[in-house]
Image (tube, rainbow over all chains, first blue to last red; front, side):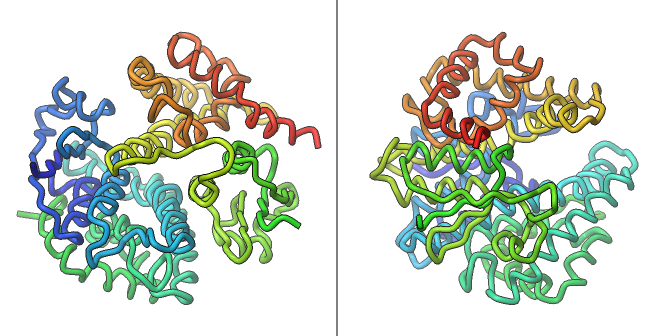
Length: 219
Length: 215
């Protein structure tokens, strides 16, 4: 039985999981969820994720939601292959991966998500105008977070150490969208962050995911 | 001197999260107070421990960590054999359920509950005015989250399983502050949530965390 991932390729959180699945070469089926029709708030989907958000994952009798718990499950399930994104064999490295996963979750995401929401979601999905005050406030916060990253990346190649891990991967989709906005400068102005971004976004697994991240593209 | 050190403040929710875990695991540690009123958490010495300048920071010998959930998670794994079992062992599928409910705390519960705690507990404490609109918006959001918890807790004694785990523990700091505000009504109106709140806040290890206020 194959893993089923319910979501859409253009969603930051769904694509986060897709990147992880591709890193491990895992077989899966992407089952589209019709957000326009509110499918994610209907009982059938709420039975998978009571918070009514994509993605959700089914693997046989296991149903999961929250993208970061899904990617962690994938990394554990396919552990032992040449791919090692959690460093589970080394408790100290594993703890550092968890620390920088928390940083992405608690420091980075809350700062970048309003920029993404105002710059891309509000105009495209709601036909509204971006709230520049919110963007400016978030850009300032994101800049401070990225200053910490700039310093950290002077002592290690990736966030948790000299190895690529889920901590780096979890940043891919939000940064990809940020680079479509003028706020991509926050990445480009910081040489080590920029180099790190260029490295992680050139990974073959991410190159399979990036073409699906089409929000904001002009047709 | 204990190999484990926690640098933080006894009032800080994030510091309490790590302390709760250490007390549950019955592990010796040294608490190093950080004087936030004087900006010690932004000093070079502290930034060397946590470059984000936030409490707590955590040390175990030559390992330095920050982010309370990562620190508590490390303790729960490193000392799996001691004290309370805070993890789920078993198949990847069984473990995944714990990870899921930890994420729910981080991404669904933490934001609205933190905002309500800030408005209804800390702002009055600091002589600042509460923003009623922020309270209403976040109490509504928190109510929706607790509705999900109410259903979940009819299926399972604690969030991730029939045993107390890290997923429940991570909620304790914000719950404790909410109980000291009118927002406690959000728990009282949901019987399974209410029972769970009473149960987890009555744990002896949590009482030890609260007793640190008296030191």
